[in-house]
Image (cartoon, rainbow, N blue to C red; front, side, top):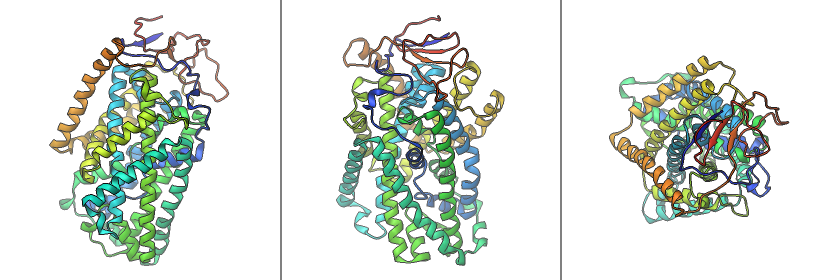
Length: 503
């Protein structure tokens, strides 16, 4: 029986049970439709922000990118997320995956990188919201009006997040419907005006490859983010794989239809295609009423994006706290079942970063996300090799060799995105990595000196394998902290109390 120990780790809360944490106060869990909507908003939220891909590469490369890129990147990431999220159906998501594969130190680093990337990502949405509004209201272009509005948006949406994940999930469903309908209208109205030859325009000499890859990557990543909410999902083994499949279809469709309409139905000037330009496309195709609808949809979409990202970031910190990686205050829930302090920390990060430009934010978050994803792919393959008997309610239907091959193209893509980063981005992200390496032993020191209160439990965190273990009615076991369960020889033991050795 393999054991991963680290003297700076503590246990998840005593109240944890097999795969439903009662810490949510018995509040309703996420069902299929709200989960699909949350994944949609974690990844996309609609075509707001894809305009830069047309400016960077022209219509042909933009369209090809959103057709081919999902098969190279989105589908592999979604498949890996489905397998590991159902094997580890707990809050914390990828932090648990990495801890099980490489130990708690690297789990902590993954958590820091992904949380920083998520907070930087969330700082984009108030910015995008105002970028759409400034086409009709120039007062939002800059100055104190823009700053005060950014703060007001952040505070309002943070409060909505505090009110509960179920509310956020169903709100995301309504926001998605409202945000996508006007683009379906654009698609229909553009049909008589389409000029297919415009879709073939490109000029490799003028292609901005850095902007092109960053735009594609940002608009099609974060499939793993919903795993941080796995402990709040109803029947995760059944719900997660289906939700991810529906979300992939929804995301790709929401990009291709507006791109085909916008680049094929109006006179093309790629230099004008920047974030917020779909409002002008709507004006040219349908008139002022459609432009206003698109702007309203952008506002609603960015609300959904903000809420989904904030939920993922906050529940990731909650999961890390329950594992003893962060002080106990991060796992304290409000009466609505939400981690109050974790939400406040994420909102503070958003406010601090909101002054940055769209492209700066985009490049920083992509670089940090790339580092984390490389570690996730390595953990996925390593767990297949080292723990083939791990309980996997959903399993990617490929053997170990072919799942390794599956991870190669997206890994190459991650390296390309990192290589295209500016020197400023590399320096900033290197500082974040160094801070993570230093912060981990500092937290261990505070824990040992009892400077702060951390979650404590005498129970071990056990990840059962399929060998010799009876399936539950949900066909999933996930992480166990139940003392009544007798560990089997091949079960993974993540011992957060630092008991070294094997049983």
